[in-house]
Image 1 (cartoon, rainbow, N blue to C red):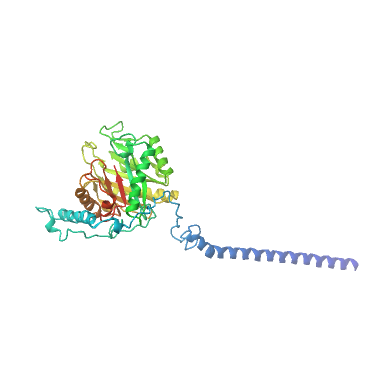
Image 2: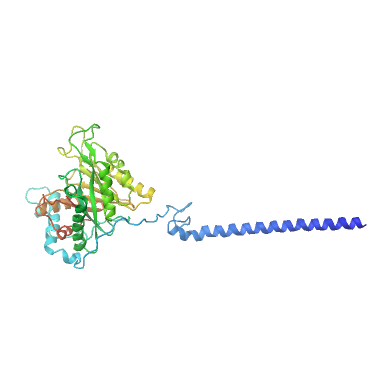
Amino acid sequence: MDSSRRWNRHRRRRRNVIVGVIALAAVAVALVLLVNACGGQQEGTGNTGEGANGGGNGAAGGGGEGGGEETREEPEQPFAALEPSAEARPISESVSADDTALAVGTQNASAGIDQYADEGTGLETTGDPGPQRSVPLGETLLEGKEDPSNGPLKNNRIVAYYGTPTSDLMGILGEYEPEEFMRLLKEQTQAYSDADPDRPAVPAIEFIATVAQRDPGPDGLYVAQVDPEYTRQYTDLARENDALMILDVQLGRASVMEEVRLLEEFLLEPHVHLAIDTEYAIEEGEVPGINLGSVDGAEIQEAVEYLDGLVREHNLPDKMLMVHQFERGIVTNKEAIQPTENVQVVLHADGFGGAEAKFSKYGLLVRDEPIQYGGFKIFYKQDTPVLEPEQVLALDPAPAMITYQ
């Protein structure tokens, strides 16, 4: 009988242990389910807030399954605009009525001459050759255009000095030592900040990285790359001075992307942008500088999309692409050139001469064939006269980019 009682006590203890183990297991399962439920709620709600800043998987962040594109956190801008001086006046005061009459009146009259190709001056066909603006004074975006990017032209103007260190015949860059060059560039840039304080100007180096040649060279492309050591020197110079670097390619027989891809090492830097000198793009049997070349807009758009890809893949600040032109027909199929959310596009009117000729060209090549922003070139030695910043800013629209050669 004692053994029976002992056996029953043993069975009760064993049963109690089993029940205890089952109870503990149930508690553990309940805790796991509770933790998972809380975690799911955080993913569904808490991370939405993170997503709004580009870091989460919620709907507001745009990431994760079914959330659309991930919102990109904007990197810091790699430049510093020159602040207007204490004496700076609003553009409405710095640009005179005479400046407007000359710039916009010439643009409007020239558009009429171009549109009605009959004999005579053409002025009688314009309806109103006077200073009627398409956009307000100082506005840089062309009429009807938008800029969804956060590029350097969004709130600023760029003033660039052009050239290559291997020649003093191709622009001011080759005429001075780097330190003096930067001093002069900042001085010229400051004049634009003072002429339009609402859009402070940023200094930039427009560096010819590939130079068109009259000799075909070993590859038959009629272009030569500048020594990358020079490119590195001036890329660093721009960065050290909070300026921008714009790499200019002259094409010869090479395609746009053949030349652009050679510069990827530099284009991956936050402050480096791109310019295309279209008039040097020649066909078989032609020679740069003797024959006037041309580039199809679709080929330029390849470069726009390439830059857009670099920005997205490497989280770079938004880029700018500038297209040089000085005659109609040098850039064909312009409608194929489209800015993106990460790349701004500037159509740049080149050519030297008198004020009327330059203003006319800007009207025909930029305002009348609009893409997004306009650029304007000034030649210190060939222009008669060399225009003052206030005269340049009177243009319609005001140039977002001014290059000096």
